[in-house]
Amino acid sequence: NGTHLPPSADVTIFERAKHEHVFFPIVDGGNIFHIFLGEAAPDPQGLMDFGLRLSRETQIGYFTFSKDITVCLGCSAVSGGLKDNCPSCGSEDVDHISRITGYLQAVSGWNSAKRQELKDRKRYNQLA
Image 1: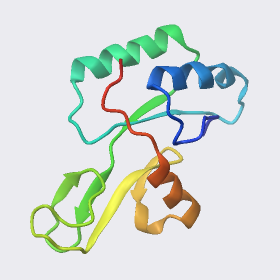
Image 2: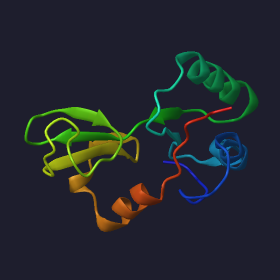
Image 3: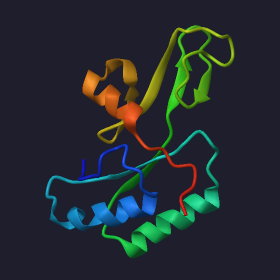
Image 4: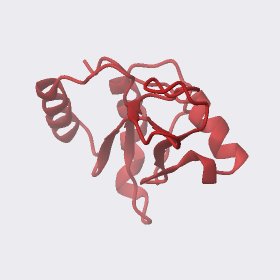
C-alpha cells in the first residue's frame, strides 16, 4: 500500500510525507499514505488544512486519517484508542479495530507481525 519509513520513526507527520511522497508516482500497484491519529479528537479545520497541504506540496495521491477503536464484546460499547478494558463496563473482553493495508479490520484477525506493527505505530495528535 505504499512505501514508508518504519512505523515507529520519530518524525513529524509532514517529515514522513516529505520522505515518502517521492515514491508515489513510480509505484504501479497503488499506494496510500497512512496518518494514524492519537486519541485526541482531531480539529476538523486542522484535518482539512493538512489534507490541502499534502495535496499541494507532495505527490501523494491517496491518504487516510485513521483512529484506533476499542469495541467491548460484552456491552457493545465503542471507544477511541486501544484499551485493555471497556471504559463503560470494565470488561476485558474487548477487540480492537484499526486500519491494515487500507481497510479497517478487527485486530484479532491479524497475524503477529501486523499486531507488532500496530504497537509500533507513531500516532499523531498534531498535524502541523
